[in-house]
Image (cartoon, rainbow, N blue to C red; front, side, top):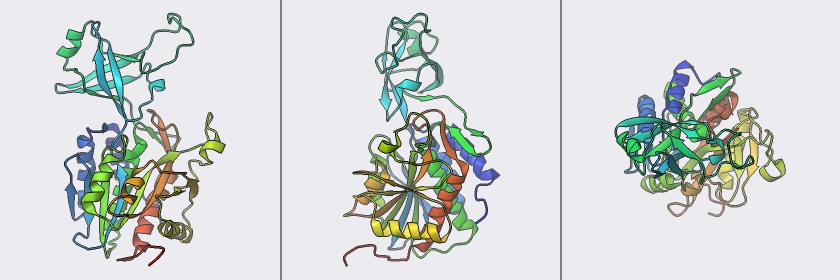
Amino acid sequence: MSKIINSNSEKFLTKYLNNSSPTGFESEGQKLWLEYIKPYIDEYITDSYGSVAGIINPGKDYKVVIEAHADEISWFVHYINKDGFIYLQRNGGSDHMIAPSKRVNIYTDKGIVKAVFGWPAIHTRHKKEETPSLKNIFLDCGCSSKEEVEKLGVHIGCVVTFEDEFITLNKNKYVGRALDNRIGGFMIAEVARLLKKNKISLPFSLYVVNSVQEEIGLRGAQMIAHKIKPNVALVTDVCHDTNTPLIDKIENGDLKSGLGPVLTYGPAVQNNFLKQIIDTATKEKIPFQRAVVSRSTGTDTDAFAYSNEGVTSALISLPLRYMHTTVEMAHKDDVENCIKLIYSVIQKIKNGQDYRYIK
């Protein structure tokens, strides 16, 4: 298969990643995503919390899901002191270590309020070795009192995201905030586009699902899984590229950007389905890597696998550097190969296929 990602695809990806989609507040990102996939699907469904599923060939008894999650980590305004400094609580797995000196957007009913994570100069800090923590990081939006902050529309519960710009490094690396996991939403959207472009006829209903609230416990996937009641779920998410400084391969495995999608072995992954994916990758000459988990995958795979009396599920992951920072980095070749693998696997699934070990 030739190169998949074209200029129009990358234009959407840039727009999608530059938009914010905080956990619990994913609606604007979901609208962008749905608008992009509408030409490639037959109909769609949503739920009350914002998960979206585009449906190809609806109405069939056998249902297959390809899934990513739409939400990104962020912060909540938690406390505003009398001098107008704002303290925060995490919304998902936000990293306090990277916060000092970052620019942010505070989302209010009056619009976006700009602010920065303040951090005293090294010359002035009481303890030179002091490190950032939730107790000492704070936002400064240029105000001198709590009342002035509140006049801007900022209140307890406002959501905050880092401000950044999606870029490409060295022509082959995507870099930006929230590739975890809007890059997954992009990949499954590209699968839908390819199916439409190549006029692939599927014998089952395919649900292209972008779930909400993964970052706080797989909640969106839990809800949409019960709504769809699928027979098979192929989930895509990100995993760690462990070939950078400060990562222990003995603890985290040996995975590297550019060497292909990562296939996971673990209790939530149905082994017969995983074997089908590996056979497909081998036959189609799509490079892949292997990883293991001792208990849960920590992804929406778990939510689908353990729903509805058990759903045949597997996980295809994209190796990612610097997860949960503003410079998350993925190799373009891996993105291409994830799309190719999902696209190829979907066509190998037979209508009514039974993956059980004991029948």
